[in-house]
Length: 455
Ligand SMILES: [Zn+2]
Image (cartoon, rainbow, N blue to C red; front, side, top):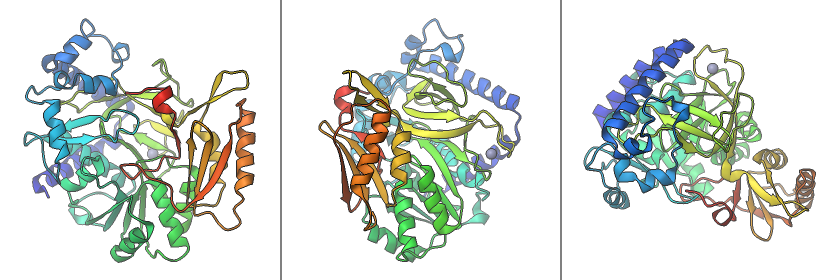
């Protein structure tokens, strides 16, 4: 446990508190200033950006080219601002990574799981890493629990414990000075998770929504007996029904959070629960369509372009994230100057492409499946698009669950959207299969790699 880092994080969190009372113009002035500094640093020390933005150094942000994960990985050594960083060395560092190890003694390396293609590697220097850690704590602050030495609460976090995953890395740096923490791997069997939680009796629970839903079900039937005061979800899409189930079991509101490996915490809920406030003092977020044109509040974008204002080591300017969300048009009654996300509907990979009767293709938004599947009393579900069928997995369904009725309502829902309805197979399973980081996406396609190659 890095005590000095702990203090730096606490200091950072404290220094951010007055930002909650900024006006919108103070926020915009801060963004403009930080962006200017970021671009100066990139043009001074990154050969990649010197070329990539050549002749555009004074253009406004929205005129700059979009950066993809593939480009970051392809030009890795040139993009970073420290010439002693080498991708090959970073990869071998990651292969043997343990605990709080740092590359070159000063960089915390994090990786994306790479489920949708090549995995991305992201480096953070000391002050950048302090910012990432503080960004995770901000959600706790906004939930009405000031973070500090004097406010220690017992925390249980059920997420990924693979060493290169950001939540594991954060846990290795700080066994939080503000919270004694039990870390549980999301891929452990449910019985083991229940035993550990019963033994630890957390006051705060942090989990992927799919796990929180399973755990809530365990509480409902009496195998789990914990009384957390605070419930946080992050790492996956939280549907309305999953939220209602978790909140109903403990009679507590859930605070949802949104984060990315590239930047740490990106948004969190306040106590008004009107949506998630974007951390716009740390990251400039553009909601855009598939052609990178801005999308107004109230409309779902196809993806995001993020500019990480504190990314000095590996500058990320207009970096593409495949999340689809919509901003709220109104302001939140809490008065914070941070823009509000009204709804997140999932990743672009969760938008399925299916055939139409005339031989064309049409896309099916995740919302259709959320609506139909969330009505099923179950511990969890997953829709898998396969070459030969649409497979629907349902875990922990009650005895009176009617799989055929569900299949029929899915067929009708798809037909109503003009889809040539594929075979739909509903299967009961013990548990929804989890990926490398223990996550269980609600919708996934086994066709993606072939049909839509991604970085
Ligand atoms: Zn608010």
